[in-house]
Image 1 (spheres, rainbow, N blue to C red):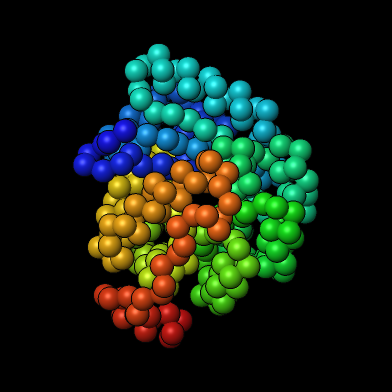
Image 2: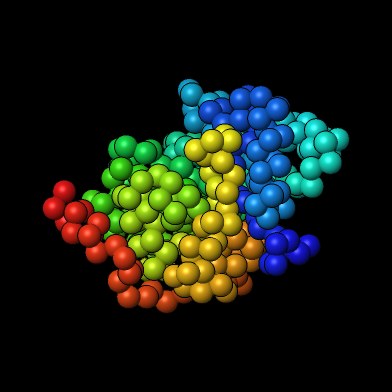
Amino acid sequence: MNIRGGFFLIDLHCHILPGVDDGAKDLQTALAMARLAVEDGIKIVACTPHVTPGVYDNRGPEITRAIARLQESLDAADIPLQLTCGADAHLAPDLGEGLRERRVPSLGGSRYFLLEPPHHVAPPRLDFAVQDLLDEGHVPVITHPERLSWIEDHYHLMKAMADAGAWFQITAGSLTGRFGPRPRYWAERMVDEGLTHILATDAHNLRNRAPRLAEGRDAVAARLGPEEARRMVVDRPRGILANADPATLPPLMTPRGSGRGRGWMAKLLQLS
């Protein structure tokens, strides 16, 4: 399907399921978020509620049923949005077991899944945990690394995990400054240095965390060109849902030079 002059967009990180986490609070909000997504050019959304032991104890079968109910509501309201499964999975000792037993849904039932590191504390041996998951045949897609408070002291880990085979998802709004200058700096740096596989909205509501993906695509197009922007919102997400071998999907671009327009932030980070 062709939307707004380009192929439709695929959002693989969205908290649109009503009443299951800190995302959409009710069905009315979920439907409104869906309408916004369609207006933005999004055609496929992965419903990815938090799976955080002891906080959001969402499980695969419950998530699947909730997605089916929401899809029925979308169809009844004539909202042309296709839903698929997923989860924003917190790092936990039994994560691999949860993926194998489908307690933790992967993206569209594929080998790829969203992995959410802790926001404020760098987990010890994160790279080893990621390697274990890769060795089991999973492909972790590490979510919003640019917004982690500890990325400055552990950026080398991002590069090491990417080299090992992990994927990275940047939040579209980070590239336009919706989360402030620091996440924007790291988002632009990861894009420029060839460490960004996909963009997603990580939408939670209708206000400051709305499902806007096109703005991120446009920001990448301005930095790397339209072809790489399309790969981040169409080609690689489509390959994920098809459970394609990572080696068969478009490779990351060769890192470009220092990102333009972020020198002042680089100096600030060096002083902090």
